[in-house]
Length: 345
Image (cartoon, rainbow, N blue to C red):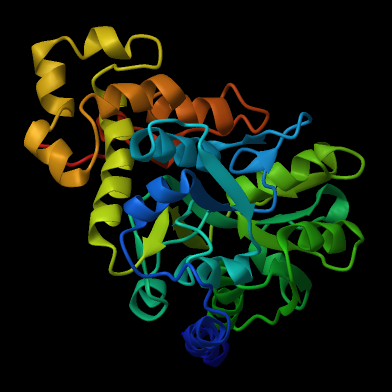
């Protein structure tokens, strides 16, 4: 890791500690998150400030995206109603302080799972919701065809993201120079880039695909280079030390994956779960439901609200979405992908 990368890794936990010490809300981060959410009557979910396909408002002002669907699925199980959720948009640099101080109960905000974050920031990742990669977007007319062509260029990158660290390290390892222009938020980063202040825009490939949809002159004015410089496994995040809540959120995600493997969809969930084999695989039993504080039939209710994992992907990121992304690594393991749910029993 480069000197700059090590400095970022050291500064992040210190910044979080300072914010927590100065601005700890009255509702405090400690305690039973599920009980707090039920007492409050609403789940507070931290999301992005607007990334199409992940979490963004549509023309009618409704939050949409795969991260949004996951929040709604958790609310359906935890509170009995998928609509009992408040979405709180957060900058990348503000997301972990917001979670650790109790401002939000759950982060479902295109956040990369790393050891540094889990070890030093007081958070835990439930699992991977979306396997992404870091890529680069450049103007189609720039003549740039590979990342090496960007040596000496300026690159617009959002503050507080893993893209910021990967950018510097990737170029340093190849003895290439790069000038990062670090911008405070995702929307500002896109604005600065489209103003022509940077030659490249490094970020997650899905994020770049979403940004390109809104490019001046149309998406065709920009290309995303085929090279992928880093793994970006994205997943929901909770505060450390909330074991029961972590278990519930983690198995909520696994249940959506498992449902797809057994052909349980939004339209047939009740019928398919009458099949003894399917029911045994997706119904852990009354004792487990009681231990997790949820009512029987929670898998069926969840799938009826948002569909299985494949349906969520297709609707928000895949063939049925404006992004039209290939499912790729996010296919089920039986189809050559990485999506895999441990057995419930």
